[in-house]
Image (cartoon, rainbow, N blue to C red; front, side, top):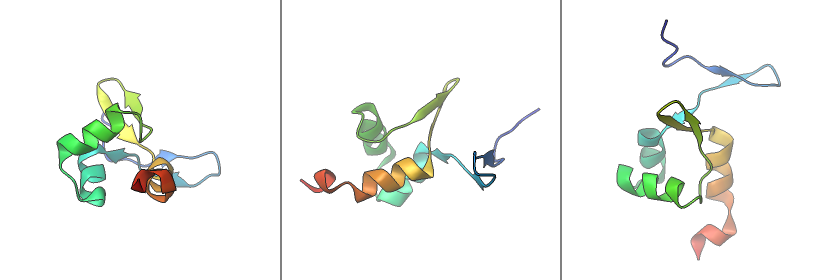
Length: 71
């Protein structure tokens, strides 16, 4: 049974989808390799599920709102 593309339930009863690296790159307007680098350097929190790497939308929002990122 595949769960690909299905929403993830949250503790507040809502559901938000985890983002793939390709989606992160698109939203940041950077290449996939740059998105990987941001994750590998620990600037953007990620979740590893088996071999897959996903990012919570809240973590992307935190990354984008971090004033230290613009230095």
